[in-house]
Image (cartoon, rainbow, N blue to C red; front, top):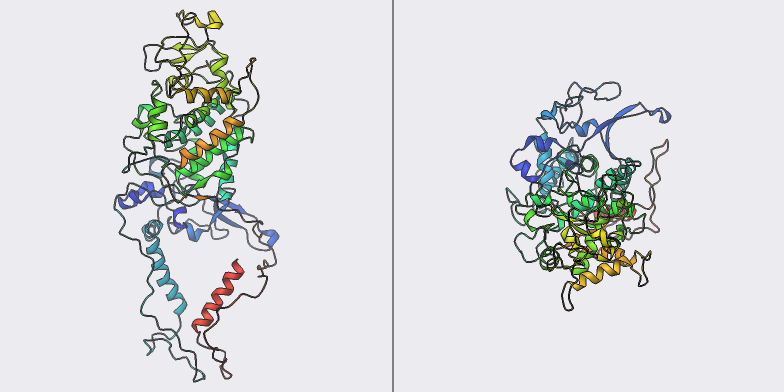
Length: 579
């Protein structure tokens, strides 16, 4: 993990020698610390993130950046270059990117992707350090080697190694060009909370601009949806699903706001690159979307307890966009959510309820407007989306074009109300009657955009239709009252959404892990006195030998060979202190 924090790129980038990708690691920055209160010199160090807070020293950064002649001798500041610059090959920023460390960069990159190689080299280097200055090579080839002094003749017999310890090896050689990236780190509770805090801060930064906030928050949720909606339970070879891979060039992904997530410079991308690039994009996106749902529901729906991580990002996802539900067809619910994702129609209705936040943008999808009545409502995650089916007289808009959708009139300060066909199909059989008006009792409200539809109601699904399950779910989630109006109970929607979201974001995946709990107490802050080590509640239980141990020597000059039993006892003590 240490090397993943200072070397960017994927395994494929490493294999292919993609230098710029490997240089594009987390954005470490220099921060000054005034240490006068501790009586130690002031220092500069490299940092990223706030909660958790990551630190690197110049000696760490020097493994991947050549800092020769760039470090201030007084306080360690590096002021002439910066760790990361993604413009013009590292030269297009206020300060150029620090040059790469030619002698050690490739070694660090290799260790990032080959843990067995790192462990093997670490053992070799650690052994050299431990034996430096000893006489292991002076006329002695097999331990124990003689050391000057007087020892008992009955010294414990040392175990004889058969050879160098065998390090864990992968079951087979890594594929040179894998479809999947290296396994993702498991997300800790502390990291999850930090992602949540970053999304909350970005949301708050929009101030009173609900239109822009809706665009940002809704874009994050839809990013996750477009990632998991390509899952195909019937495809054992390339099932896809939540794998951090989206074909942004495909027409059915055009609705994703590509100013929220992009290669460089977009706000969500910057949060990821600056603090969370050690986890998979898939895990990060879902945590960010969970934060959106918590924030937009005013804490009423918090999905933290059900969050799991360990997803692996795919290197490529050819054909991903063709698996998504087309906005223009009614077969999308059955084809995508039911047949390929293995969900129920009720699950599909719950997931589409996420349309309650966000907006359509004509610069991306061509569909312009919001799914609810006002921009203020478009930043609230609740059941309002389902109420809109019954509140309005919806009529077709943009007929005969690729962006045909539905509206109920009124410009709403530049944010017209709209539904997609895939929304309307949940309650109305628009394949049986089109064009039509969803509520002809509203009379002239059906006669807009050059259409007279007051006498052409949209058909309902007939008895026995499998689509009635979706229609009934819309009615249930809306909390529509028999005497008119709507109740305020979001519980049926929230419960159904949480269940469907959990299924959709884990489809086809195994070995996902819950959040790693945060420490129960804060880390010890550096002070003038050393921290107190944790004390075990009782003396650690030492391994018991099968017979009485050899008595301690009485004439040892302070030196003794270590027995296997003693080594294991030390190990047990350290484990007890750690626990």
